[in-house]
Amino acid sequence: MSETQDRLTAAFERSRSFPNSSASQATGVLGSAGVPGPEGVLLEKGDYRARLSCSAEDLSAARHLRSHCFQTAALDQDRFDSLCKHVLIEEISTGDLVGCFRVMLLEEAGAVELSYSAQFYDLACLRQFSGKMMELGRFCVAPLRQDADILRLSWGAVTRLVDQNEVALLFGCASFAGTNAETYREALALLQHRHLAPEGWRPGVKAPQVVRFLDLLKGRPASQKPDLKRAQMQLPPLLRSYLAMGGWVGDHLVIDPELNTCHVFTGLEVTKVPTSRQRLLREVAAAP
Image (cartoon, rainbow, N blue to C red; front, side, top):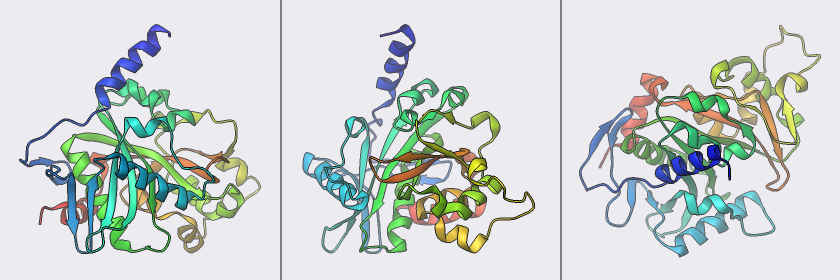
């Protein structure tokens, strides 16, 4: 192993665990930062609760839900599962798992190269980012439980984790169903037109199968604006949420045949979330 790899691995090992906190609360960038209780509960609102996985059974349930959502033949699991915290969204009355996601805390910028996203994107530019980062991944909601409150509660839980750990950049891969980029032409035109990452933070190409937005839109008149209605319909809910909070994306789509998806790198600088969105997140993440 090279000296550079040794250094990155050491930084990653220092970053991978969330700090153990008492039951006190602290104020973060996006509002009141809740601390998980004895059972790992992050947040309860209405019909649902968000809690940290605390057993092998919890992780297994999350993997089975992911497999169902991604329609994979085998159980969806990888080496990053053991490096992440897993958040489960459950219906309070039944205990049914209706959604899940995983997060990886990176306290040092150099460790970004060992993230899940770094398998697909050249993230060397983000090594210059100042502040802690958190990768959000494997976000999914049970297909028959498409309740907006599930997504809302999930973002409330993310807000608490961001604040608790003083995260400055939230990032991940936002997935589209299937591998045909043409299906999402208007959505990708919108991303190219309005939501590209600042050049200094824009990821480079690394994956073997990619579709550059400009290549897909070649021949399209520069004056032709995206069809906003169609674009919004084509955007996955998670990506819409990122963009509504001021998030940005890379300039290309990665084709992932293994999960039968295509995805785009997405980043959100926490301090740049609009005030109106901060207020909404505070309302969701506030302790009852």
